[in-house]
Image (cartoon, rainbow, N blue to C red):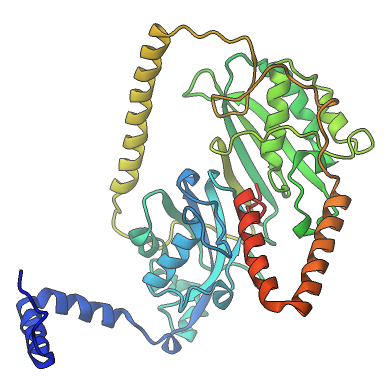
Length: 427
């Protein structure tokens, strides 16, 4: 290795020029990067809707967070991709009217998540006025999928949504699925209990209360609910749930309660009782069902005004990356089953404790199950909201007296809240 420590400035510059001449490919790469920088003022923009799917277990939820997270979020990857292919000018989502249909937590997946945003168009203002020119538009789906990881895939687009379209506020319903192993569960009891979710109810005892949201209305409407066995996976079942909107952790709370009913630890009557805030003014301190089996499966819009297509007709696009992900997980499943057979054969399992199912295959191990009536009750929403307002007031007063120490403490508090999941996302 050459020792450059004694070289003069002029000699070093000369050597750099020599190395650049020796590596013309590096120069070509730099020129290509420079060519990708475009003048956005020369292009029109258009509002579009996009549908996409993602596997959530390698991400810190869907939404971009205000602070650095342990894992990237799905939206971080999407916004980076939008900027990489020069569909948006910056990573500031407010600049391109970005909106999402619904937030999902860490670990939760989606098959038909929807976003709306304004992106760069390849058409002139006159061409944009005529739908016949859409075939000449940029292939947004292909462009984004080319730079995104294989576990995030765009698959449908609405090039001409109605005026005022917003992915969140224009959505009429959301459908969730929760997949679970039916072993040692009374599925008929779970089906019976699930029917009590139908209609409009106060779901405050089926969600996580967050004082920072200052939420006072916990009434949500469930349009349809069912439980059935998966056709291609005997012994595994899925909860199908469709509603107008859902509270934070609502679906996972509903499943946690259904699991206790399926195990015979609680009666089906517990569902309507938990909806009666006179009986349960605060939620019993039960654990949430696991996040991995939860899927935001679909989102519904006005079919007359919102038309989804696969985009302009293009040549066949390979799904090699996605195929690789599927193959990887299938092989891991087979290897894990080998491990299970070997361990079960050589180490007999003895268990004199109660295992409350949570959908993760392991559950919560307890000496005895504590009925919901006897469990410690969490804060009621009014108390949680008041406590948050009081804390905010104290912080404001402290800022007036000691601004520097206030901001330091505020950063520490936000970090603590994020670690506890308070800044997490909705189901």
